[in-house]
Amino acid sequence: MKQLSSNRCFGGLQNQYEHASGVLNCTMQVSVYLPPAALQGNVVPVVYWLSGLTCTDQNFTTKAGAQRVAAELGVALVMPDTSPRGVGVADAPDAAYDLGLGAGFYVDATQGPWNSHYRMYSYTVDELPALVESALNLGPRRAICGHSMGGHGALTIALRNPSRYVSVSAFSPIVAPSQCPWGEKALTAYLGNDRSAWTVHDTVALIEAGAAQLPMLVDQGTADNFLEGQLKTPLLERVCKRKGYAATIRYQDGYDHSYYFISTFIEEHLRFHAQHLNAL
Amino acid sequence: MKQLSSNRCFGGLQNQYEHASGVLNCTMQVSVYLPPAALQGNVVPVVYWLSGLTCTDQNFTTKAGAQRVAAELGVALVMPDTSPRGVGVADAPDAAYDLGLGAGFYVDATQGPWNSHYRMYSYTVDELPALVESALNLGPRRAICGHSMGGHGALTIALRNPSRYVSVSAFSPIVAPSQCPWGEKALTAYLGNDRSAWTVHDTVALIEAGAAQLPMLVDQGTADNFLEGQLKTPLLERVCKRKGYAATIRYQDGYDHSYYFISTFIEEHLRFHAQHLNAL
Image 1 (cartoon, chains in turn brown, red):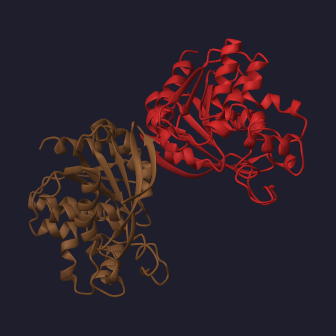
Image 2 (cartoon, chains in turn green, brown):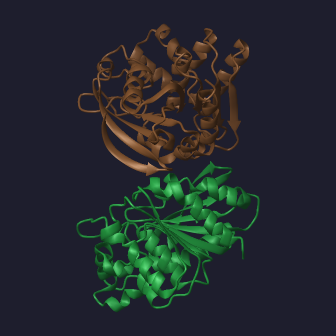
Image 3 (cartoon, chains in turn cyan, green):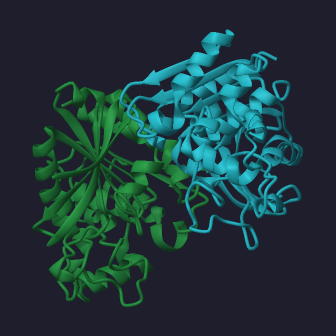
């Protein structure tokens, strides 16, 4: 990993790195916050943050105010990009914000032209943690968290890999991409028309199919313009109730889809994760 | 004031407004954070934030994490833009970042082509507070704070108007614009070659001339690339010592000029101001 920048922040370091990704077949950037405890030589646990549509590694890094809490709790934050990038990486023909660049949806594409780069699932689950945890001496305890498309990513990745994450949380997640326009568009493009290939990337479908329990916290703003048409939190509530899945799903009155919402509740999410990260 | 956006944040509202400015002769945008106490009908005190070169009303608003503390303390935050904007507003011929748009330097320009719009001093001291405090039922207690060029703005404005502000603080301020390239370029353009017109916009010169005491806190990162050539904090230390001016001037080890620095210490600045805002 090549370090691109490093800024002192709450006694730790907010760093940005560049690295070659074999899985994505391109060069990627990733931001990492190292808390003071890590700088003192301790091996600290990690919270992965997955961002939403249009984001890079910088949105959460600059806007969420998470470093203050991470510094106190002694956890590292790893913030990857949301899609492969660079020359030769396909984008939507109309440069739509909800497909292609900035919209990897945390799946491994099987369809052209996406399948030569768009493998954000394997990148996020395997390649990136192996690289960053080794290079920066982090882990092995790991939690995952995200927003919107990244909330979908965090939930599906954790549900499919419960032994790799001690806990999962999400802000405004797309809980059922098989049942909303954003998800149907992306999964059709990346995975094809056969919807049976979609279910492992659909939180509601995974819980319906009996996914293992792990500590789960979801926050959803009631003033979020995407709640009804895209995010569909009630579908998650219903499947959790039906299957006895013990998730904490909260509606936050008057909050929208923005980073102002995330910044307000990120402290509670990080404390939730720290409780499980430190309990091991 | 026309409201452009409103986001729930830490129980309060992060709003952005547009308004006609007679002083600046253009339309301006300003961001305001209203803490929960204000939404409950209380008249709350205000902290004004003045940003640095290249910034708009959005940089501090999205990156500093100040709303959390303002919510707790019950103070409003007012974040103006850093220059006039719009069609017909002059910019540097080469669109330089340190003159013209985004670089108003909180002075009232007397030289063409700047003098038809660039009156950020009067806008910040008079027009904006009158407008925003009346429209949003804020004040009358008021503190002021800023970063870099905005740190210069906060310090000079407070020193010239000690009865209007209970306290002043700054991150990485340009303490002596008469003695650094950024300041010399801007003050020459806006105020002309006669340096006697500059002294009322120079913190070190104002304190040298016997400015009245008011509570003052300054934070400066030791890893700030602009410290030696532009900011020159030691000049402020020296004049304060010589004149018996009781400012708290702190060097923060390893911090740079970025918002990661500001986000780390903004809580201490807001608590400093709240102490004086609530003591009246």
